[in-house]
Length: 312
Image 1 (tube, rainbow, N blue to C red):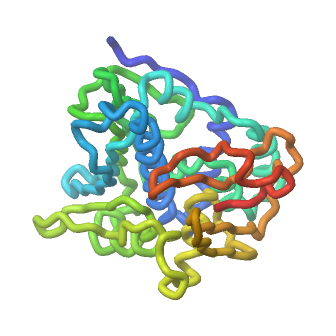
Image 2 (image 1 turned 180 degrees about the vertical axis):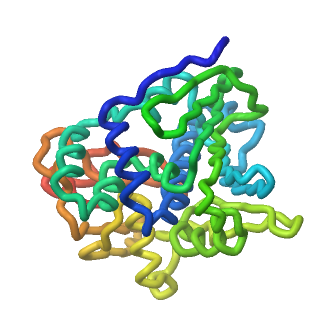
């Protein structure tokens, strides 16, 4: 099958221009956003594997891997999560298929100083990779399917999609770095960014350094740790991860209940009001995990409608 060239949805084109031209000082957050997406992909596959264990039988250990090719000037982020097929690549990377996208674009034009916060708030963090890359290539294979697909774009209004080869499930994002982004090929720089923004991610983030594969994060779910062992900045980065936000939480609530039923709660009240807070279609941001396995983020019983601004 020959490569097919498609155009971005209008809203995506506007976002890409802002991301590429206005967020220079905050561009290290691209790594946090892509690792967060990779973690979510692994969580979704964990959930699917509860009823379809064959999806992970060949590779049950979830992980995110970073790799650098200094000769090719590329940085690659790979995961072995649920992956995407052709339709998902077009839908997820070429459009913003969620309520509130028009409000997002309106906000971009009216509150330029808050562009960073808005981009995270509306969950379009993938496009932050164009802050540091001239060309982005996404190769993905959906779990349970044999065919892989490749999505390629320079962020200038179009993308191509074509059949590809990939040995296993998951997604790889290869970024051809801009001339002024060479710092993101340095292992120590990447280690620092991961430890700062993604230390709470509950699966290992790995990278080969000096011919040895190392884990760059603690790889333990933050809510399972003792409160006394968690620093305020760790709470803040976890809040930003689950809420795709850039502000700091106005309040953090962390408790453990023990008895016939044991559970832990970790909730955050955002400092910034969501743009679509009054939309009846807005869902709360509370996720349910059982034994560190993601179960659902669509459970109305976890949080009443009037608290739909909560994250946790």
